[in-house]
Length: 438
Length: 134
Image (cartoon, rainbow over all chains, first blue to last red; front, top):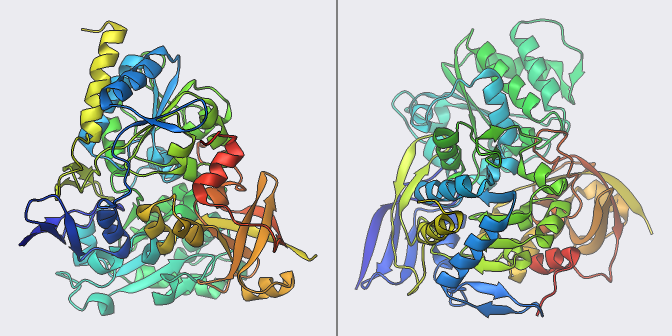
């Protein structure tokens, strides 16, 4: 007989769907089916059952081959590497639970590390902009129940957050949005005709990299001031119509993604998007929300925030927390060759950093803690596979709207495997001894 | 051989999402991300059929990927490589003091390279980093 676990939380994207049903074998060791999840979430659950999964830590030998070692040996290696380094970098954190992040930060404090999460290559500019001018935001529940004007700016939820539109933003019937999709107007701003744009009432195919101008033009249109005939590739008339559509709603929301954070202007794009939101509030109620990628990158920002005061790019190397993106941020630290050890957990900089930074990682003493084999494990000296957080261990995670949700454990990890938190506790205890802390 | 200049952007695709969760060591990752999506008009300018291997070169490096027709177009003048090691071999790493590399908007040159193979993800990174593999 199998049993079905209900209300399972999906550990893939920031939407953090909490309505999955997972079928497991009677002994709780095998996961056989996943219901309600998107194709990516399903794959994440099912891949935890892969037969070719690495289940023990592996140390790279002189000849390039892997040698299997015990978790104790791996913890010793990691602790020694971090304790010896002058300025280690502890990067990742976004695909594990808040409990593990917290233990990791204890280690970082003892060894004087730079701590950074995947916002470094994701919504880092957003965090800078929020510190610059604040953010009028809301929860996804409010959007489901109230929002009748939805803007997706530089994001493509049909691909990156597959259930976002069906659970919260476009299709659900909420308290004040009883007709679902029919009670909402959808505007998409994207240089490609994305699958999200194809669903929209209005698609503004902006010239790539000219989002700042278009955001600015929206504000001009709100005031009915003069506009050039074409701004950022969009005819003025179309901008005015879109601005009027926003004004005519009762509750609007701007969701934005990598289209604005990763182009030139970066944080200034977000500054302007938030200013537009503020401006729209002179006419109606409007909110703005970043489409966070990893399921717990928001949580990493929260935990770093309450422990050190800053949401990412925290430098503890001087014994107190410093924060200065561009200086203490991962990409810049690697590009300048400023760190002397690389500790990666729950993320894949090998695949998602520019290659010049990955080359730098390959030169350093390095440890990668990840259940998968990835380009990062491919260039690291030690690979520590762990249980899948959100599948084989529960814990706390934060949704993209900063709502904390407790994840559920659905199956046991393969025998003898540790979780992120358990492994980090081993490392922390050893670092304590090495550093002579009580 | 014809070469065309494009503006390169990267980003997620749902195939990329599935591939990273099903194993980055597998060929499916290459199928999902070792590609460049080109507008039909750009393919015509390049003088190449769909599914031709091409070399994409920027100021920061070059990489071999398979040119396919766009799935989310039209977007003439823009090339799209899903996020991953292939795109990151050529993106602009400069952060201009913001902490964020300029992943979108890298000027690139695309030329046909029929006989060159598209590498697997982990292999591509290891080769560029000079990692010895046993």
